[in-house]
Image (cartoon, one colour):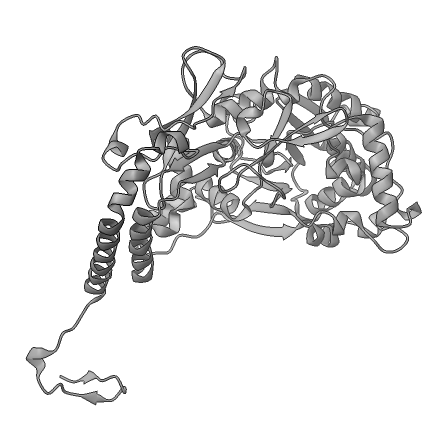
Length: 503
């Protein structure tokens, strides 16, 4: 047998018995052994210094306490933050998951952020006439006047750019829908009802009369005050009311959808994903397993702190699995990287925190079960600036007082008077969508044939979506500045439609 030399030529070794051949696993173990030796040498030289430092450790404790590896195996690990936070959101004495805290702070009927009659969502009296504004400066001044006049937290894009924003969505539906069956549209979290009214307007003006006359538009709204507002908004056009209904319920509750509906339909979610409840997971270093974050009251008081437990909640565990889906069969390079990271974490441990869209997972689970032939259009923020709360995919927690916006540095500050909104990881959203449609399970259990996806998906920047389906000239100012295309670069659209490959 011959083997390649360093020069690349084929040549038999002169002394085969002295030749050492290292396979991938041997290289990995050698790599780890060398670095562990370096670690223990470094540790021995600094042990005395660490002992002196540990004497005053309690006085200079970090924000999160790091527990030795053996204690991390405990069934319940109470690695609580050094600071305590006062909260009236956590009811009862039992710990709650972070998603339950977020849900209560946003949607509780008595004190939730979206349950107030005045509401944080603004409604414009009329459309903005962009062609009469000189440029960006004039637009920003006009916008500032609108916010001062209405004294609300924000205007949604569908409100700022009405009717053109919703018209683009309606055009995308009309272009791709199967018009041989009655058109049915569900909207999750319809806000003030502007999108519903504008979509119905577009269908009345542009679709064949049969399509408009036979269509149904169902709004699923968790807020009773917003549900009432939607009826008022859509009712401005009398003919719309026979096509429009509001169902005041939680869209994630499978029972609310009734029996499975196999007929084609459309589901709209505009800036809904950012306000869905999320969970938080924590790890004391770069390689230790993730743990769930729970919130509990301290000694029965109004103060709350975090509690860390091993993964046990099904939604959290599934979300972690989806995020790490590509790491189940790591390559040699990934193994080496993980080994190096493990060594580095022992020398320089760094706590990790990550936010998981478990609310999105639950919602898509429900939608795929209830409406297996749905087509989905979702739009949201892919990035949020100036986030000070730690963790991957961390939210902004923002409140408004005396006309000024205040960004909070901790999510536990939310007491029903603050919005909690998250950036949307659209790649992760796509993975969750495929997972809930059953494709991910087919991937794991595939046989001789490669499974075919049951969904076709595409992610578009908002500007690309509007240029494809909308009328961007309608939102352009005199000097060419277009706030719809230029100011919403951190937003995207996600489109997901069923294929013909469903079982």
